[in-house]
Image 1 (tube, rainbow, N blue to C red):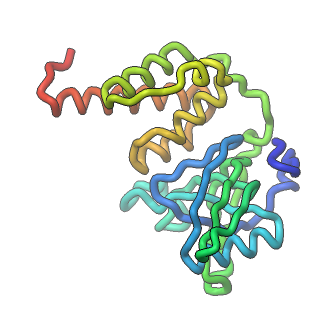
Image 2: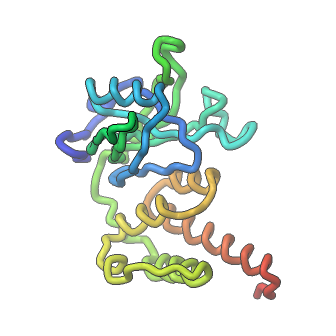
Length: 225
């Protein structure tokens, strides 16, 4: 996995502990980018430290509900997040940072470490090494079904898209971009993150979208077939 100027190819390239940024409803995926607007002092300190070292930060959601974090060893966090590298950084002049994180690989939380040493949290992790291997072209993805689902969602919400750009996008870019852009809640975003592969992620996104469309139709008094 090449991210910015750095290659991540094996477990030796991934640190055993990382600063973590708990962020509800956020989704970072390997190979994709997540823009962030940082303003809390503890997270400004976290990104200062990351910029002065390896530029790595883990994005993870707070636990979805009691018992819903998959029995994470850190009870108030989900068990799986995504490691990102800072590939873009700017200061706004009013004390904020505008940052872009590029996804490297997912990780499983092992334990919280160095409690109280920093104003932010640090966790020991186990990386998903399969994410470092490029080449999932999404050959098994039903691209047509994914696009139909996306089109139905846009029509139901009176939205438009640049279809020429959508159709030119690679299957990997399409699946991951639609997953990250999707307006669904934390539980749905976590399900998309934890999908085993691109095909499963696409199928999960289609299923979530169909459920959302059916629910909206039902709430508007339409008869569901």
